[in-house]
Amino acid sequence: MNSHKAKQTRQCACMLTLALILPMTAAWAADDKFVIAAKAVPAKKAVPIQQQPLSMSERSEVMPPLNVVIGKSILIRLPAPITRMSVGNPVVADVNLLNSKELYLLGKEIGSTNLIVWYKGGGTTVTDINVNIDTASLESRLRELIPGQNIRVSTAADSIVLQGTVSDVFKVDQAMNIAEAYVRKFNRSLVTDVKMPGSEQAVNISLAGAQSTGGRVQAAGARIINMLKVSDPQQVMLEVKVAEVSKSLLDKLGAEFNMSSASGGWTAGILSDFLTKSGGVLSGSRGALKALNIDAEKQDGVIKILAEPNIMAISGQTGKFLAGGRIFIPVASSNTGFGVPTITLEEKDFGVRLAFTPTVLEGGRIHLKVAPEVSELSQTGNPFTTIGDVTAVLPSFTVRNAETTVQLNDGQSFAIAGLIKNNVTETVKRFPVLGEIPILGALFRSSEFQNDRTELLFVVTPRLVKPLPPNYALPTDHYHPPGRAEYFLGGAMEGSPNHDTPAAAPGNPAAGAVNQPAGGFELR
Image (cartoon, rainbow, N blue to C red; front, top):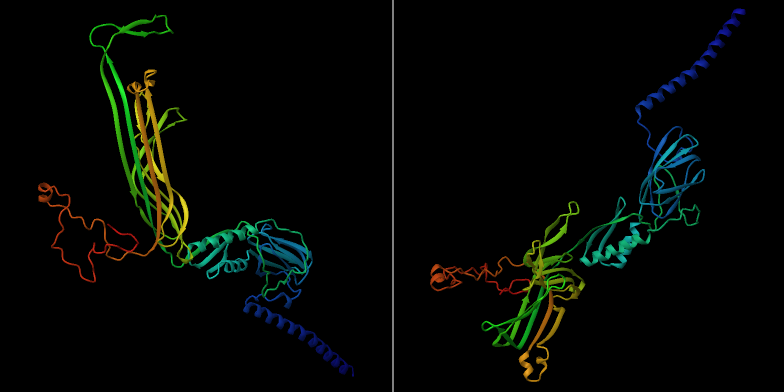
């Protein structure tokens, strides 16, 4: 009986041992399987925080970036209480903690930063914050104010980029002005008081994504990059005529007596120096009347100046033209280091000069900024005395110029400037007392009358032009150098054309056959 009890006792002990060993073995097997699975399976992908509420033990998650409009604020709701937070660049974005699960975010300046949040459970999240401007608002405004144009607005770093195609350069200026006004409008201080207005939109942070509000922007420090293109840039040729007629009239009448000593005799004169001890010398002379000169002169002069410069430029670009010369004028300057005066040469251009900037508007109207000038060396200069009492003459210029802005249609002419000048100069030289005697006093007077009259006119004519055909006429096409016999025997400056030149084919005219090429002007 005792042996039977002992046997039952051993069976109970074995069953108890199995009951204790089997759970431990199962646990060990489960742990081994988990470790193997952990080694075989890669790191888990980020999932929304809502699916793992408070199990972020000792892990740091990278959240999707938040896009915030500058000058606008959003409310961020967190999935769990936090202990602290940190903003990388407070200048770009201002983040305030309202309570343990809500943050207030305000975009202050264009740029990027990040936000790190530490949760009570031990986990952390890192969120990139991008503060940009509201390009949709500006693009909508551009479409409203400049209809029919393909203008797109985007951002690049801290700049506003205008892209697309417009019809003319004037539309480019309009778009740039609107963008600059848009930037200036929001370039003011932001209110950073933390408030909870009812219009704020709440954003839940999750690993699946985030939302941001829209609205106006403050373009603090923003720049505007113009990448707009003109669909079909037009070319404008400007014809300028500078016409001047100057008339001068000179009448001169006078008498001049010449006195000289005939022979021997006496002279009379006083030479004195009152500042020295030497006395004055009294001398005299006797002379005889040798001649009476009558000076009478009449001059008439006419000067005609006609300059017709032509230049072409693309709409919106500046074209310049100069036909003349260049001289160097000495300019004195002192060397402050050594106190020795030095002479430098300054360049001065003269001749026919033209600068203009065309802008083709809607309807074919042309907006012109034009500055024509005609200058030439004057016959009189400015004398001055150099070192060593040497007299030199600096050149002077006669300049006629104008600068203005007008709008014309294609082919229209406009007189942009003109001048009528009439100068009258009268000079009378007379001998004292004798020159005032009636009738006989004319012998002791010299009269001079001069009248100068000048008429000047500037006329501009813009034309929309296209490229020339392949075969166009040149001013040199009709010039033929003379042969030796023609030059030496006949004194001819131009030779007769070569009649042996073959005729041009109908489809390929020779150079010189086109007398009026495209461009609106005739080559003569």
